[in-house]
Figure: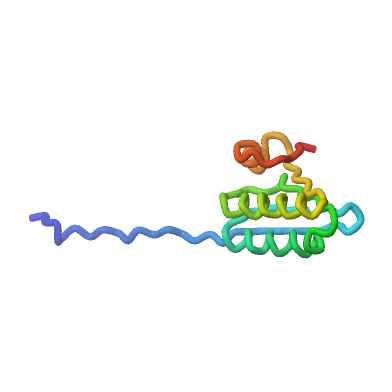
Amino acid sequence: MLTRESIVRPPIVCPVRPGSFTAEFDDTTQILTVGGELDESASAALRDAIDARSEAYTRTLVIDLTAVDYLPSAAVGVLARAHKQATTAGHELDLVAAEGTIAQRVLLVCGLPHRTS
């Protein structure tokens, strides 16, 4: 006879996939090119990269988000804060995301100023 106790259920497995995050800076163009998944830990790394590359918001910085695959609220918060700090300091923080990309759609929905090229 089949009972609840005799049924063996396989364990639920949630695979953990490590996120990939890249940030490369070109000194000549002042462009920080970001790619991959901006999860919580990557968002902290992005914040640090923006702080360092803008020299604590003392110079204009372009951030290209076209290659970003995942842009959650933590990362949006980092970008919004950085944009506000740059503006307050009298410099630009120019966000770029190609038309139709995940980053462009998120920036549009969140109302963050950006350009598509």
